[in-house]
Image 1 (cartoon, rainbow, N blue to C red):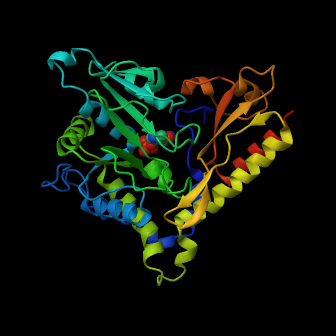
Image 2 (cartoon, rainbow, N blue to C red):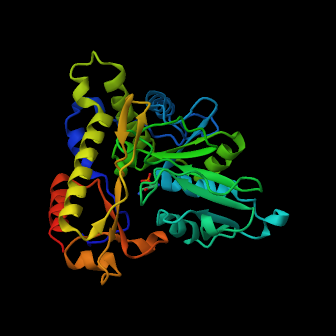
Length: 370
Ligand code: PMP
C-alpha cells in the first residue's frame, strides 16, 4: 500500500472493541433483499432506510449531543457526500440574479483539509473556497464549523454573524463522548455526523445530516439523487445494526455483559490512555508542544471529562525545524503538515485512532526525538 493515501485518520482503533460484540453487530442479507432503489417513498429523503432513521434518532437521544425532534435525517455516502450536498442546497440556484457569483465557502483556520479540496475539485459555478473565516469580508457565505475541530480539537462556534445571507454548516463528526464532554444538545440548522468517527465504521461509508428546514433537506436529497441515486441500503442496514448495538448496551443493561460492550466507555478509556502516553512522550522529548488539556462536565456520563481529540495538533518547538512533517518523516513518523489546514508548517496533525501496535511505535519514536 502506498504510504500516503488520501484519507488519513483511519479509525482502526475501534476494531478491538467490535471484535468483542459478536452477533450484536452482525447482519445477514438474503439474496432477494435490498434490491429496490427505494426505501421510504413518503420521506423527503426517499432512500433513507427507516431502521437507520430510527437508530440515528435513538443514539442522539441517548447521548444528548444533538436535537432530533423536528429535524429531517438525510443519509449520505459518508458525511463527505453530505457536505457536498449541503453546499449545493445552500448556494443560490444557478441563474438566480445576485447568485451569479459563486457562494463563498469559509472555515476558521486551522480547518479540515478536505473542506477546500472537496469544495473546489469540480470547479463548481455555485460555490468556491474562500479560505479562513476569520479574515472573510462579505455577507454571503457558507461557514463550515467543525467542533471539536479537525485538526486541533478546539470546541468551536461560528465566527461570522449570520446577519447577512450567511449560513453555517456544523460538522459534528467528533461530538461524541469518547472525544469530548457533551455539554449541550446541539440544535443548529444543518449538523453532519458519521459512523466513521462515532463507531469507527469508516468503510461502511455512512453519514447523516440533521436538517431543520424541509426545503434544505429536500435539496440535499436531490443532490444525492443526482450524484449516486441514493445511498447503499446494505450499508445503511449495517450502520443501523451497529448503532443499535451501541444504544442497546446502555439502554438494555439486562443484556448479559452489556457493560463490557459500552462503546463510549471503551472509547473514552482508550483515548484518555493514548493522550496520557502522548503527553508523556512529548515531555520526554522536550521539543514538542500540544494544546492544553481542557475539561468540562459531561451531560452524558454526569462526570468531569477531559477532551481527548481524535487528532493531536503537534508543534515542533525546535528553532531549526520549519517543516515539522518533513522532520518527522525523516524519523519514520507520517503526519499531515499544518499548511494543508491553512496553518503554520511547524504544526502537524497526527491521528490518535490507529491500531495499538502502530500507536505504540509512534509514541516510542516521538519520545526519542531531541
Ligand atoms: N468531517 C470531518 C471533520 C472529518 O474529520 C471527516 C473524516 N476525516 C469527515 C467529515 C468525513 O467523514 P466520512 O468518512 O463520513 O466521509
